[in-house]
Structures are given as structure tokens and as C-alpha cells.
Amino acid sequence: MADTKKGREKQARNAETRQQERDVAESRERADEAEPPLPDDEVEEGDEDESPSTCHRRGCEEPAAFVVLERYQEDTGYGAVEAEAFLCREHTAEESPVNLDGVYDEYVFRVEPLPSRSV
Image (cartoon, rainbow, N blue to C red; front, top):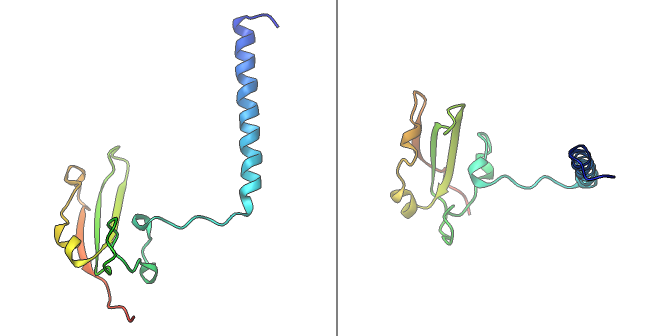
């Protein structure tokens, strides 16, 4: 095949098609795998019983005592983002609103105590 623009474009299309085929085959192989657990900041409402028992901050092993929630407008302006963290007493005292540039009518910054846990 001659080295022409048309030939290079065809080679690029063929390479893209082969990559897509490999991706589909790999996805089919992984279809049986279990879903990974959600990160702490993506725990949905109603999952309070599955909340972590220790502080969300790296390196802190203290029991979580509060949940801090902040809902703000996404940078793109196309939706709300909720950030939730389960923190010990000390780290909760250090928390403050972070995304004030994303404030809108339904903005929320809330700190709520976690129900006492029986250990």
C-alpha cells in the first residue's frame, strides 16, 4: 500500500476498530466480576447503616461521630454535586464550606451527628 493520505486514514480507522474490538472482548471477560465498592463520598441516602465506622481523614483511626454534607453547583453549571464525609469530633471541628463559588439556591452545608453505635 502506498503511503498516501487515504492509506494513512484507512490504517488509523483499522487501528481504532481493532482497539474497540479488544475493549469489547475485555469487557465481556470481566462481566462476571463483582462491582467495586463505592467511595465514601458517593454513599447514597438510605445507606446510613453502611457508613464507615472510622474517620474519613487519611491516617485517622478515631471513630466517626459526624457526617458533613456539602451540596454545591458543579463547575460546569449543569448539576449539583454532593460531597459527604464521616469524621471524628476533632476533624469535624476543622470543617468549613469549601465550594462557596458553587453556591446556588439549593446549596447545603450541614453537619449532623451519627446515631450512636453499639459496639
